[in-house]
Length: 281
Ligand SMILES: Nc1ncnc2c1ncn2[C@@H]1O[C@H](COP(=O)(O)OP(=O)(O)OP(=O)(O)O)[C@@H](O)[C@H]1O
Ligand SMILES: [Mg+2]
Image 1 (cartoon, rainbow, N blue to C red):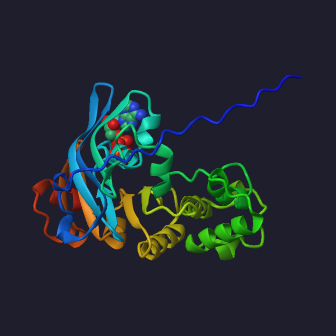
Image 2: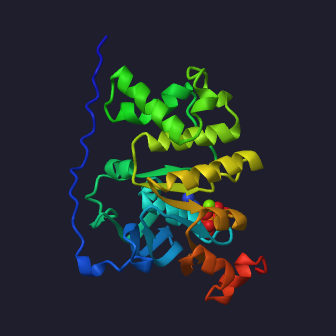
């Protein structure tokens, strides 16, 4: 039998083209930005989903993205780690600046981008593998084979995701046997194994019961000491509880971006006030 060994696809070199300093607007409150977009536009074919959004996410803060269904929150979030590259016909124009580099440049290696900017989706999506193998998946993909090292990473990530105590005695069990809330924390642990700087969460608690939701919220609070977090949420109380800053989106545009307390108590725009007070429509 003839077998062909598939050659690993060459990764594009990391050709981080540096952005001129003067092009980057300052983050709010003079806090250093972990990530920012400048004049970002996203299209699905002819349909424009995001229109000219410039937004800076401060380091070690939680920023909530809120707005009515279909306003472009997920589209915008996916742009931040080039996840829209996977959607046929989706075009992202504008700059996404990370560490002074425009990561929206085609020359930038997407694999490297996603190592620094991790993502957790709305529905928990564990692999049909054991709990251990789910968490070890990323590190193995990045070439870590040493068993002791993998065990160390798995334990550390599960502890960070506040799941260790619940699963430590049955790491070999299928991840699919966990509850929804546990699966979501497992997905967060999986995202943490590669030690990203920025964590993108798309409605991470929308499919969960109140107890699991409060665990995820406590976890977000804990994680912001190490990570910069961007969270999409439909739940206004949740945005008020977990975030430091809030950005209100409407029909693909950024309407207002400010401290969460300002957005909820004295927003500048009438549309923001109507939305956060539930008088929308
Ligand atoms: N894969 C896709 N192909 C084509 N159009 C899309 C795609 N994903 C989203 N859209 C369109 O882009 C717009 C923004 O969608 P998006 O999912 O970003 O909104 P959202 O604010 O996250 O909504 P929700 O709160 O319901 O999750 C919508 O008009 C949607 O129909
Ligand atoms: Mg969405």
